[in-house]
Length: 324
Image 1 (cartoon, helix red, strand yellow):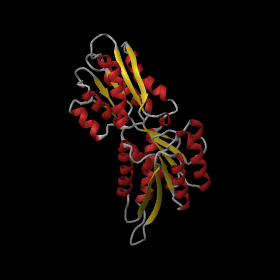
Image 2 (cartoon, helix red, strand yellow):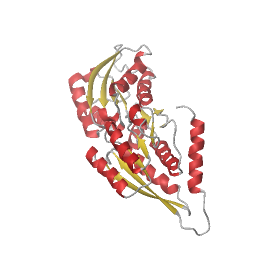
Image 3 (tube, one colour):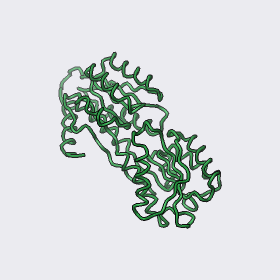
């Protein structure tokens, strides 16, 4: 993204305008914020929404208050549309939306535009065409390609380059999320593997299935993969830590040892996964920085509440590899 310094300045100005004004006994200005999360029982988005609420609370002062309503999309686009309708009916000043379906951004944007309510999209990216619909929408997230590349780099940088059995080929299992998380799911997988092949490492895909970000499904799929391919499996890649933790249970149940005869990489750096990395039960994870993203999303709402716009409408937060 270009002009990061200019954007930081805009965000700082908006925060100052909203939190630093007023004085002496005046009734505080209250802004109403509607937040819709695609599914409350997602590990990562739980941390994300909790940080949104904490950060809004930290910005309150004697002159500014934030009335934040957080609703569960329940993994159902109809439910999330009802969330948005509720926010509109209750005249919120701004929305933060974690889409159930990226492909529904156009509909949600049109609803917001007609109501005159700016919207900050988070975590699930609308298409470029959808982002052109209105100048009062933006998107806050890390770059998924970067995260997927980091997963591959963690394996690439091991002493044996991920070739746990030493036969010259890195054979892997890939647990993917769901297509709605990205319209270019297979490109994301490709960026993980390209980090290996670009280094001259020979790879072979043994197993690739959709686990819907779910721990139980991660365990089930990894159990099936290990039963089918046994010691041939060198690496398990999981596109989120929930599935990785499920995979870890399957690996242990199969009598395999992470770091000795198999490797396991996840994504999101949720606390349980970070502890697993420290304990040697996971090879690594990639920090999808929920706290920085949440604060960036809140800061973007401040720009809109101050009457501003965000251009270009993409606010990116870098991923960080965690291996110890």
